[in-house]
Every structure is written in C-alpha cells, then in structure tokens.
Length: 434
Ligand code: SF4
Ligand code: SF4
Image (cartoon, rainbow, N blue to C red; front, side):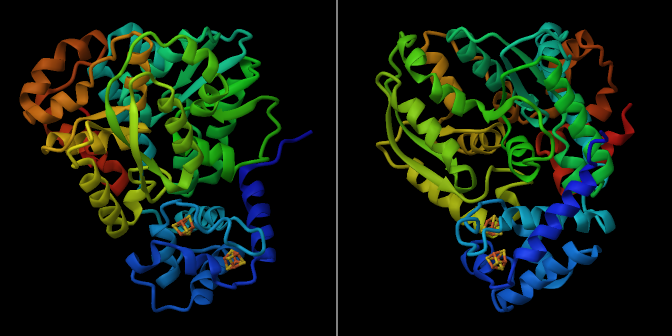
C-alpha cells in the first residue's frame, strides 16, 4: 500500500480545521502575543479568517493574520479554549507552512543550521563523542532510542548528561541525532517545502524503526511538537514517542535509589507554558534530589526559548524574561535552572552579564548521582568574547574532527553561529566556507 504523502496529510488536517472552525475568535482573545503583534484592534474573526483563507486556498499570509501567525510562539493557551476542539496552535503551524511555500524569511535555513551545528559540535567534542551524537549506530534491536534532534548538538554536554542518567538507571539504548536525523520541521514549517520535509521526517522515522524500539525518547521540544503533535497520526510507527523527562518520571523510583550526593541549592526553575507538562516533569525530578529546594517555577511564554518559540514574539518575551531575571535575582535564590538546550544557551548568557549562576536540570541530576557534570564550553567561550582567540584554541579539535578551516572566515562567522542568526534569516557567510 502506498504511504500517504506529508503534503496530503497536511492538506487533510487543514481541511478538517477549516471545516470545524467557526471563526468565533476565542483563540485570538486568549492569545498572549496579540497585544505584542500590533493586531489587538483587529476583530478576532478577521484574524482567524485570514488564516483559514490560506489553509483553504493557499498563498501567503497577509496583514494582521500574518502578524499574528508569525508571532505565534507555540504557548498553547488557545488549545483548551477552542469550543470546537480545534488545535489553533496546529492551525497556525499549518498556515505558516503553507505561507512559507510562497514566501520564506529563512531561506536555506536547514543548510545554514546544519553547518553551524556541525561546526559548534566539532569545536567542543573529541571524535569519539562527536561520532556518538552525529554518526548513526549500526542497527540492532534495542528497547529505547534516545533521539537528540539537531539543534541540541550545539550544547552536547546536556545530551551527555542525559545519557549519564539513562546509564545510571540501566537503560539499553542507542543514540540518534544531528542534522542527518532531523525531524523535518525546518523544511516543512520554515522553508515551506512539505515534499522535502516529508522525506526528512520519513527517513528519520525509518531510522527509528530500524532499531525496533519500544520507545523513542526525544530531547528537543521542537521535535516533540512536530512529530508528537503537528504530525500525530501521520505514520503508524509501532513505537511510543515521548519526551525524555516523561521517561525519567516513569522511572523516578529507580533514579531516586541511585542518588548518592546532596545538591544543597535553592533554585528557580525556568519552564514554558507551551509544554507545561515537561516543566512539571523536571520540577518533580528535581523535587526528589537530596538537599535541593525549588523556590518556584518561572513560567515563560512559548514552548521553548529561541527562534521557533518565545523569540517569535519579542515584546512578550522581554516582559516574561525580565520577570524571570527579577525573581532569580532575589537573595534566597542560588541558581536559575534551565530545561532545554535553547533555553540554556540564552539563560547562561544572563549569568555572563552578572545574573545568578545558570545550570541545566541535567547538571543537577548528574551531581545527585555522584557524577561530575561536563564543562559548559560555550559559556566559557562566550564570556571570554575573543573570537580570534577561540579560533586558535579550537583549531586542534576541529582538525581532529576533519575540519581544516580558514581562521579569518571562522572568526567572521563565529559570532553569528553562536547567536544562531540563521533563524532570523542571516548567517549567509557560512555558505561561503573557506
Ligand atoms: S499557541 Fe499561543 S501564541 Fe500561538 S495562537 Fe495559541 S495562544 Fe497564541
Ligand atoms: S480555532 Fe477554535 S477558538 Fe479559534 S476561531 Fe476557530 S473555533 Fe474559535
């Protein structure tokens, strides 16, 4: 039997939404980005109508509907609000994908992102560790695949911490990730290339299937959103797809039994409205760590930090971020704790500017298990802020990883690579590798 194409799956999903949506406007009324997108004076039904027109007829989003959809940070507040059972987050995701077929502000995003990721990983990791994250292992039957996605490879220490936890609770798993195992969201949503996105997603799902796993554990919230929500029901895979923090909570008794060290800190946990269940997972995991006290959870909008999440709506992001930093600055807080890789990179930068120390939840789990967390190389390099010195420092590691790069070119691109400028349509210089 021929498998359905992703473009057909998306067209069917769009047709279901346009049939069910009554343009009541409730999703707009509860949407926190509306006041920040300059569309608060437009009738909600008009904003929704523009989105439905694109889903029905194709073409680019325009006017207020474009402003609303482009600033959607995936916070998910609209989902329980819809009286018709439509998922408005998916509605806007699909509309953005259709619109990007006509006009994308992030051309070549995947190519630039892939190069930036490989470069950052190769600067930080010895060849064996780099292979572990980027080279697909030989297929074998294994109960668990740890799917690290693409972008998280920029912060490899967090992924190795997660593996440390899986090892500590005796999980038999293989690791799959890097740009060669992308979930497909970049092609489908940002580049408007559903055919290519479908091939990428199918290729990655097939790789999962090669291991005949019971469960694929994702790390990246974007992979979770794309495969787990937007494309739910696209393929019958035969394995469960869940976030690694769900799995850790399911095995918390075993994890707790392996804790050997106290982590005497009072922390503020950073989490996102758009995947609040994952934030609660981490709060629960940290709540079991001996000596650790959670002073509170600083909820920010969106489903993650970064260009596909909270950064879509800069005004709202700035408000929420300031509230987080003000809370973290209180004297009773020892450290701010990040959840995902994108959040960690951004929050770590606030520590560099004189804010409270930032650690990832995986740092804390490794410490509680008696281990020594890996160094956050990116943070140290950014704090030094000397790109030319960084080029010299990392040249031997890059060469060990087969990258013999022009130092002038590298010094030119590194600031944009570290800022993930490709998500704003930039980083053209990485196309001119020397
Ligand atoms: S997901 Fe959040 S930002 Fe996007 S439409 Fe829904 S409420 Fe608005
Ligand atoms: S998606 Fe739901 S809440 Fe939004 S306009 Fe349509 S029916 Fe109303």
